[in-house]
Length: 88
Image (tube, rainbow, N blue to C red; front, side):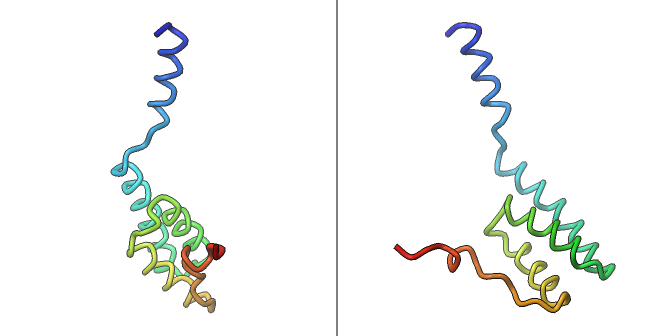
């Protein structure tokens, strides 16, 4: 493998993010979202929690706080990912 190949491999590996890193990033968004909920700031809470959902879509904590934020904002919970998928 030449120098260009090694550089390409290093670039690809640098872009890889482990599950643990994704969970840590999601936890940060969840903490900020929860703080916004506590402060009555539901729009910024939803922004943070939706970012957390992108990182860890199956995390029940994310969905718990999303439900609280939507409910307090007077909105119904958005449809789950499975119900948004088109049928075959």
